[in-house]
Length: 347
Ligand code: SAH
Image (cartoon, rainbow, N blue to C red):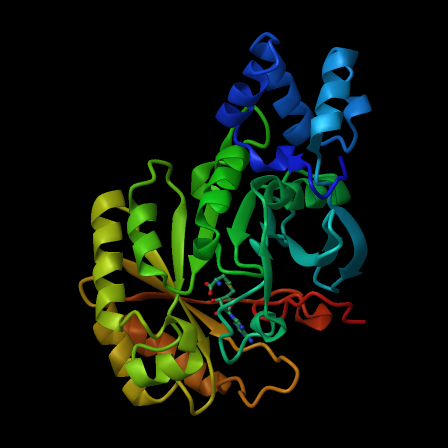
């Protein structure tokens, strides 16, 4: 069988690997061994799985692919951030970012969930290249493991804020989070895992029922419907009222607050009218506002808000008791910051 027609072992959760191996009449512990080779030892060939019997290795190699991903380019920012261009087994490319904290205690990975993105938000580079395909669960996990190997340091936090819309690849993304959270392998605590969505409401409802304490971030960017529709045309089918209702329901179901991401664009979504609308959106919602200075992307008509406007927004939101932070987007000198990821060399 040709590699591209074989089913990939990176499609399966732990329980699914157990089911899969049960068809080969091998003891159950073999599934755990295989799982550890994939996500603890992170090997790229069946031959390296030395505690599996040779016959089983050969059978697996015949029936399945490993969907290995490789780093083909690394760019290092002066702030320590590293952006990786990762090639998937079928040749497609995604970008992943490793962001060490200044005190060296944290290493955050910003991972991608799709090749390209179907959402085409007006101010984001990723959507400009269109959508190619969803990533497999294991291709999402491999991004974390590749960054861990490169930094020679444990990844402590992950954010699903790279390329793609996680809630349009919901099942694979949730399977990946299960593996990433699993202490048997990668073991990153749920509270250190955040997913960001542009607001796919049915999936926000589904995510509310996930028992692990993952964090939810929502790209709001405007609490005025017409502005939001022009910035994020592909989510215009969901209105702001429904979005707020889904977030209130999320808070009620999980007891966790939600993060609202807001990239500030001069004269577009940063007027006082927009500020008022944001305050109204936050009222009655347990939330935290994360203001993002707009990052430059090529051929874009949008400009970042002025520092004074940013300061005015922070002061006003805080005077309304809305917790607000200003995101210090790292790695903008290597086009690794929010909205700058695309699938090509950027040198
Ligand atoms: N599709 C998901 C995940 C992407 S997260 C989502 O929309 O939430 C990436 C974050 O960066 C989103 O909040 C996105 O809207 C924001 N972003 C996109 N382009 C940007 C830019 N040029 N400057 C700052 N933030 C941007």
